[in-house]
Image 1 (cartoon, one colour):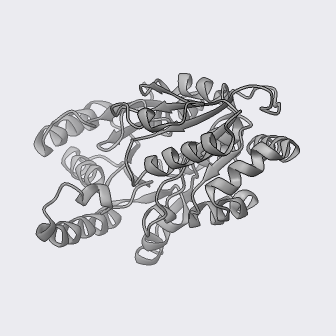
Image 2: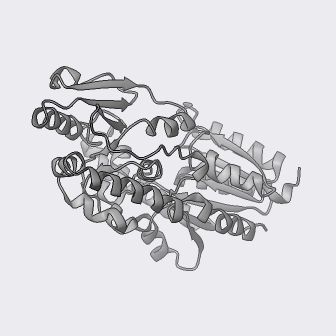
Length: 353
């Protein structure tokens, strides 16, 4: 092994097969001559000491040039391991999540939430101090760290998919047959499940002679099918491997994500958006600030109500074709991982001690 070109991905909030890490960053660096290990402790129930010990063991054995971390916690663990091992190694913080965020505080008693939020904010600041460089998934999440640590190196690395995984199908108008829609995510109000159900009830009532099929990919229990009109059929599927999910998208006409556009959600760019677009699918999304900012070509469409967007796509087949073809073209020409590969490789190479 060439220890000078070894990278460790230290994951405490994402699984080892996370699409951003495994299918893009890890595979890209491997193809560029790097060796790499992914240490994921996501949902493993291990404590801080166990994670720290495993990280230290990895650092001593593999002597990595770079450790790429996904949370403030993993940054601090990695930094401590590097100091204990006495090696030169760059610690990089890949910032794709808010810390603190609603999901960090949801299970915390109400009176303790301010304390936990302050503690997590301090941890984020400490991670920023310890990190040698940053990767930023989107501009809103980058801004606080750019202001607090203006001298540190960083790379903007959006959530664009590799064209290798996109499964586009011949674009055709969904008329004369069942209209197939897709929703992937938890069955919660925050993620927009109530809005999705409401949209399907609207569709079935407004178009009583049209058949609708909604595929729901989720880990949650089936919910809502008993309240649907007779011409709306729901198919529930469990979460599936990444490449299977990419193939699944291709079998649908319209993709949905109607998460509540609150203060946090509106600043989060949904990763699935680019997969839906790359498969040549029109998308009905909530009015999120992040979409308007990061993908301006489709930003105006989020200003329409979901019902208005659905009517437009059903009643104007030419508009459906136009959006489908435009979305695929945007990803093929602009929003794809192939545009990011070399800057990512160059950035990681520049961090070798």
